Image (cartoon, rainbow, N blue to C red; front, top):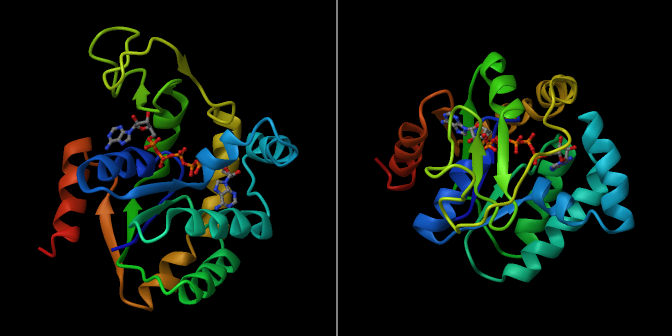
Length: 213
Ligand code: AP5
């Protein structure tokens, strides 16, 4: 079964996709991570300027990245985290999936109030080695400055995780991405979770959807 996780910046999409990757063998396809990983390239440099402003990278670039990834992963089940983000991307994804004989199981929407999101994003940091996500107050490593997952001691912060860029990211979400809720709801595989709940409650809500309860 393949999934889309749909929700605003800071809703917890990446956190839960990482858990699903570990718990259930999905591959997390995060378009934001892919763009950040390309930072040494011409594409990565252009994308970084757009990302730092909190705007969206053009559809044709994003669709090509996802098309290549879907070829790379073969038949393994995947979670799309951060894609699609526009009507154009959603339509292109439909065409890609049909061409590659792949299907979507669920589109899981994270519902959450904007006020919580700014706090979550501005306090976020990530293990530079394995990518495990943390937060200054909501999720600190168990041992100070040591990653719980891999033991590394270097952490990074994203250049778009500041209040100004976050306001632009939220505006992009509401105008360009939120309309996809209706797009998928009309096709009846949209499921909603409460993204403002604590980590384990969100995890349990998703498990219940995947287990068909
Ligand atoms: P991207 O990297 O996708 O960022 P985003 O959508 O803004 O989402 P985030 O990664 O900020 O949040 P998240 O929902 O994954 O939350 P997380 O789990 O980390 O995109 C970045 C940029 O790339 C875009 O702005 C755009 O420019 C470009 N881009 C990417 N894809 C694109 C596309 N398809 N088209 C065009 N442009 C594209 O959690 C956040 C924090 O909260 C963490 O600190 C975490 O520990 C904490 N937290 C998580 N869950 C909980 C919980 N339940 N309770 C308490 N704290 C929690």
